[in-house]
Length: 129
Image (cartoon, rainbow, N blue to C red; front, side, top):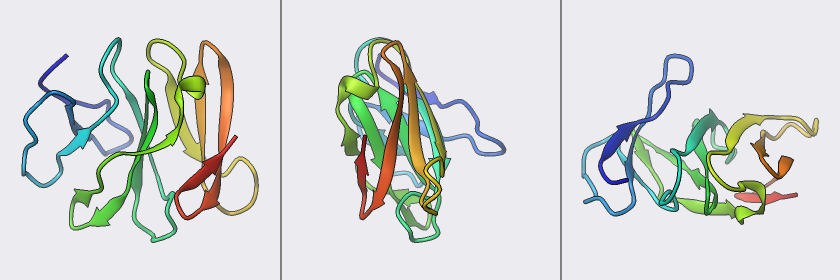
């Protein structure tokens, strides 16, 4: 799957992603989404995951779970792999963001054919099962 796709809108936010194998665009609001080759489209969620009060993007793909840190001014970091494929499984896993551990940090919850996994936010872009 090559080309530019628009991710499913979350609230009033719709995030355009450029999938691997495509020429990287230099337009604000577009990010290169690594690890999304293969079957299905990645599912994205938005949440404040890095402690800087900017809403970050997290997505699950067959190759793992990735974080796109919001750098401000409509720019995002390159994908940061926060989980191996164990939590993403085969096909199109679901992803959600919220503080499910009650520690004040937003965690990442992944649903896949393998089950439901909580990636607990430990701060400093570290997430543990």
